[in-house]
Every structure is written in C-alpha cells, then in structure tokens.
Image (cartoon, rainbow, N blue to C red; front, side, top):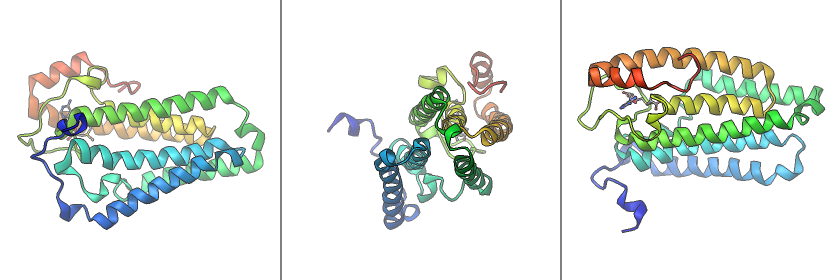
Length: 236
Ligand SMILES: C[S@@+](CC[C@H](N)C(=O)[O-])C[C@H]1O[C@@H](n2cnc3c(N)ncnc32)[C@H](O)[C@@H]1O
C-alpha cells in the first residue's frame, strides 16, 4: 500500500448514486480543459491575468470535489464541484468580474497590464488562499461539510490542529483571500470593492450561525478555541 492510500479511511466510500460517473468525469474533464487551454494560450494574449483567472477558477472547482472525495468520501456528491449549488450571487459575481475585466481591457488596455506589483500580490493571495482552503478541508476531514451541520454526527469531532491553529475558519479565510486575490490579479477596482464587502458580510453572518451550532456540539471546548484563535478574515 502506498503512503497516499494509507491516509484514506477504507471503510468510507462515496455513494455511487450521488456521484454519476458520467457527470463527474465529464465535469472534471471540462474543468481540466478550461485550465489547460487558459494556460496554453498565455503566450498569445497581452492580458495574461485573465487566462490565469480562468485557470485558477477551474482548479478551485476541481479541488472542491477532489478534496471532498479524498478526505471526506461519504459526503462527496456530484455537486461537490460547487458549480450548481453556489447560488446565483456567486455566478453573477464571476460574470461581473469577467465583464469588468473585459470592458476595462477594451477601454484602458494599458491600465490592465501596467501594475505588476498589484498583480503579483493578487497571484500570491490566490495561491495562498487555495492552499489554505485545501489544507482546511483535508485537516477537518469528515468534520467538514459544504453545508453547515445542524445535527452532530458521531464522525464530527472538534478540529483545532493543522491550519486550524492559525484560523478557526481556515477554509472561509482561504476562500476570502483567494477571491480578493483574483480581483487584484485582474486589476478590477469595482469588483475588488464589491467582493471584499459582499464576502465579508456573507462570512461574518455564516460564521455567527455556524458557531452557534459548534457551541451546541462541543460546548466549552469550542468557546475556549474561539477565544484563543482568530479567523484570518479582518474584523471577524
Ligand atoms: C464549510 S465547513 C467550514 C469549516 C470552517 N468554518 C472553516 O472555515 O474551515 C462547515 C462545517 O464545518 C464544521 N466546523 C467548523 N469549524 C469546525 C471545527 N473547528 N471543528 C469541527 N467542525 C467544524 C461546521 O460544523 C460545519 O458543519
């Protein structure tokens, strides 16, 4: 048995009925294609961060399914790619980001390629945010769920190790900084402000609700964790 296999709990299997193989393989192939084409075409476009954005977006959605399948197999479903269930607001946000990027590139092509420091900071945030989210999902394992748990399962244990030592909500912090990073990378001032405000409000509210359940599940142990560990999302 290789090292990779020994990390997987072999008693836990995905439900095949929730993971139609045609849908899952096709979705993964399309995301791979989007990423591959975006990166392959990099040398042919001046506005390269648009290619990078599409590539990172495809990688993000692929990893949502992959990490769930690998570390939390009994919860993986076809929609773990988070392509359909993330809601209209999520789709609209990315549509706005693409629209802003293309409109500004059309009217101010020089602006979009002339701030390498900002673009680089954005790139670093995207990579760091993605790594943080991956590590959070892997560390939480079976305690992680894309939906907030409202009832405690036996497999749900309090996670305070790994990246949870630095943030009590690392997957949210990872996504927050990933999203901010995409807009810095694209040099999208309007969507940067929009993403920062909308996502902050979203996670602030979500964390409040999630923590009410976590206190119900783990009592004083969660309160102690909450007191000693921040979120890595500003002012949350
Ligand atoms: C989408 S996951 C997000 C987890 C966490 N908020 C984060 O950002 O990494 C939501 C689920 O994780 C669970 N959860 C959140 N923090 C946890 C912790 N420290 N230990 C165990 N479960 C946790 C919640 O009960 C919820 O069902």
